[in-house]
Length: 334
Image (cartoon, rainbow, N blue to C red; front, side, top):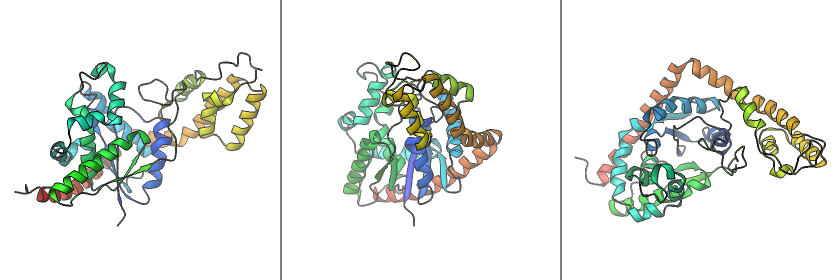
């Protein structure tokens, strides 16, 4: 039997290039070799969007369409909605007895995210909610509800996987060996930088190219991308290594083209406007097949709903089997 993979995405907005290179392309490869469960994590999205449920609901469909558009095959991947699997909520309650508040507060990923959400939780996290602080516990429930053995993550998510492993070990030490400790698979792709040069391309940072951006939007975004500030005139030589236009050429263009761009940039024989226009054309060509697939699913929303329904049904069956084992171990299988 193939090993089980569990991964999830929060439906808080459409996918961008960072998601594609950081996770999506890896998912497409992994779907061929594993029993793949992909969670649309609407409950987790509500931990910091509790005051905007319509945003979360709308993006359940949007993010599913994005994932289908990049090449995930519903015959190989079980797409499911987190809130439709009550066993996850049950496990979250059980696991909450196995984790101290102090341990959750020390989790590096949680600390970083609290610091980034000052507008929601205050400068020192004084308004942090119980739900947000405890989302690593919920994530452990996500993974173990499906007997997840492999979890694809970025480096910033490794502390969450370690916390899950701790919970599994604690559970097994009390109730007997019932749960599997998951292993993380890291993507080979580094985090994609934003158009503004920020180390992270983010949904809320205003520096992302989304997979569903139209040509006009892509043009506007790329024309405003950060270049070498020392290049004042068209013929000035520049350093392509600090230019975000060259950075994106490296992501999507051919090696031959990027080598030519690099040489011309350093010599001063290439202007920034020319370089940006070439990137716009290359970006539109790169995203074209994704947009064509997206258009199909947008025109057939009933197919997307059917995919979610079938995947959720399969996930529910798996979670029910796992819950029977858990309740038997805990002596609450009345």
